[in-house]
Length: 393
Image (cartoon, rainbow, N blue to C red; front, side):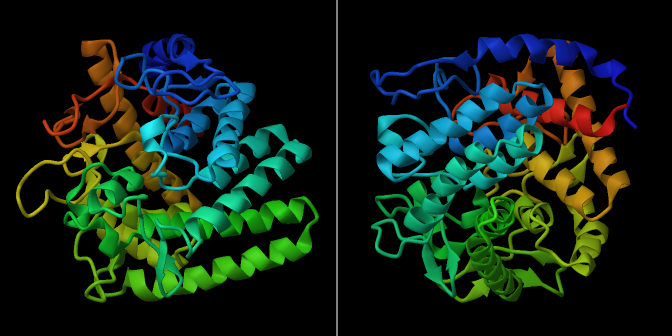
């Protein structure tokens, strides 16, 4: 078990910071759509002020439910449902110019986290309905301009303008060498794993709601997607999951943390999980935790979602994936590395950060084409809190 004492100063900072970044903006104003419920923005800086991001919300909720802020967590899910009901898309954030782009879908994962602690069946039914419609009308809708499902029942990222750059933004990995600047050509393993988990989650949740026909339908859909993912994305020789380049009908050769998502979603077989733990995990693990990719791109340019950076949400994906298959010692070791690095840099800067250089145990390396690494930071605070909850006494 992890001793909590070295992290108390960070936890105190986090407790105070929640209120600082909790927003309430119920009316449309300037760049932002109004949202009916209070929500957590990434930080208080102007670059993310008053923003609720889609995939950030999942990782933020991991910390909110642990911190007993259940009402705030539920409100953030309700805000996403409101956006879908209003626009037919959960945009990447609540800004007008982001309406043509979503983000990697985590809505059912948020619902599951909240239902575990709240057990509110009417709320579950209401939010499952929106998740089901989002899956059907956005991610699986072949009639949209931004068509996602493109090859053997599997999906890609795709923005409304159908550009490689916009698709990469929808992935949340803006930017990365992983897609070789042609994101539209790839079937990403993380996206398809999340869609598998959507179907598996809906199957389990509809069973709780005693809607067994829907439960059986989504179980069959999840199993079908699982077979296709295992067929196209698992590499038995390299012992890992890879994105699939549909243009050339080959797996990508680029190792990224996205290949751990099948462990997080319990899609991988036990044999595959053991191979990944034994052969692949050491390629990503450093003194500060898990790097997003195993290497830089061929150009040598450091993009912000590449080595040597590690991101809080991806630490959770890997750690939770390891826990799912009984690798608690490995999960705890990585969690402690991440917590220790966060605490060490906090003792010097008095801040937690959006991302970190896990190789050199420093604040994250940023690309001048994007923005300076931000302090704050909501999903960092949330994952920090959740890891303490998981591994301390």
